[in-house]
Structures are given as structure tokens and as C-alpha cells.
Length: 329
Image 1 (cartoon, one colour):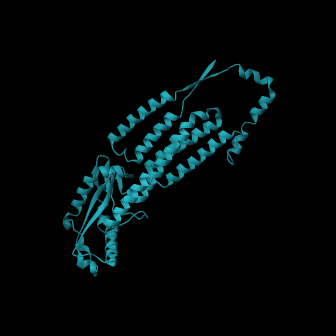
Image 2 (cartoon, helix red, strand yellow):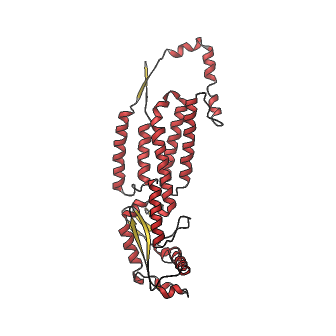
Image 3 (cartoon, helix red, strand yellow):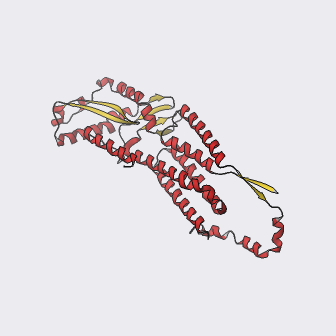
């Protein structure tokens, strides 16, 4: 009797999910974090191999000898490729349970592809692409081996939804203006870093900003050249960064002789935004900040709809709404 070993895909997919979740949370930005991820992956793989061991199947070598006595069976084997032709139009296999699983798989792959298209970080995007390819292979295998549907139940009900949820949360945070840092590894290639990396680098970013603005005594108010009420009331404008939880935000402290009118507030907002995009911010984003992973470049501005210049009160409301969104309230 010949024996065939078939390895479960669940441990492999779980390891991919470990790397994906660590990448999304910004925990692959240093050598130490990569080592931790490798260790976590090994442990995850080892534990799941216990619960999802290889299956040993025995093949009967005498079975092919019976084929000449069963011409109808041989004719059936010749027509087996036909379901592959239907696969392009509709995934009907004649097995209702299998059809439902394949539809769920196709929808999940399409969702992963859609979310991946919204992620500009090419390194993270490449990792997600591998998850996508592995997912397609899993469902292709199940199509050919419907008797193994039971093996991917945990994959369907936990790993796949968890992957999609992680990607959705990443895209939401990204659209809230969380991506403001890029790393140059020294080979000319730039990649975007996440919130955790920026939070860990907060002191280095603050020091670099202080050095850059030292010639102006850290005060940009002298560059306000509009002839309006703001110029008479604005006494200082100092750029800095501030941590809120594990998120790093740009901060500008403006000192005033007296309160601004609504019109003056908007005029100041426009000027500050201009400084972030074309003035101080444009110059600072070209200043390399040395890290163990390469040179970090930080911007106080981006051209997306997610960018906002807020007053202190507006920012407090933004933080409250963000916490409610992440917490699912």
C-alpha cells in the first residue's frame, strides 16, 4: 500500500497572519522586532502543527487495474475537466456546501485585493499579496478535494475574517492621517513606516525639529506677512510633535495677544497649512533623521483628504471620535 502525506495549510496561513498583523502595527521596523516575529511565528507554527497534523492517506495500487472492466467510469474521468470550464462563469460544482465555501472564498479574496489597493506601503502590500495568493491556493485545493472542507473551517471562520478585519482597521487609521514617515534604507528605495515606528522615534523627531528651527529661535510668527488682524495678535508660532497613546501628531503652539475672530482663525489656519506644505514643513521633510533602520523623513503635510489643521478644541473632538471608531462604539 502506498502512503501519501498531506500537510494542513492552517499553520502556514497562521504564520502569514502573524507577519501581516505585525507589519500593519509597525512592529517590523527594527531587527529586534523581526527576531521577535520569527520566534512568534515558530511557536505559532509548532502549536498549530499539533492540532493540525499531517494526514496520511493510503493508496490502493490494485485499483487502477479495475479500470478496463468499467468503461463508464473511464468515460466519466474524461469529462472531469468540464467543471474547470464552468469555473470562469460560476463556481457551481453540484455540491451545495462546496459552492458556498468557494463563493465565500472568492468574495474574501476580492475584499483583500480591494483593501490592498488602498495601501501605498509597497513592502506591506507585497506581504498582503502573498496572503492573497495563499488564500486562492487554499480554495483551489478545496475545489479539487471537496472531502477536505472540514479542515478549513477554522480558516474560514477565524483566520480569513481576522485578516480582513486587520486590513480594514489599517486602512481606516491610514485615512485618518496616520502615515507621515518614510524610511530610506540607503539603496534609494523609500518605504512608509507606521504609527508604532513614529511613536518610538518621537524624541529623535522632536530633536531634529528643534535643530532645524533653531535659527528662528523655534518661532515662525515673524514670517506671518499678511496685513490683517492676525499679524497684530500673533506673538509666536512653534512647531513640535506630541504623542497621544501610540500615535504621533504634529503640533503648533500659537501665542496670541487676544482672541481671534472666526475670520482671523481661518486666516491663521490657512497660513499654518501653507507653512506645513510649502514653508517650514517642506524644508523639514527633506532633513534626514538617523535611525538604526536608515534615514527617516517626516512630513507635516500630505495632499490627501485625510489631512486636517485643527484647533485644540477640534482636535479633542477628533480624538474622542477616533477612540469611539476603534473601540467599535
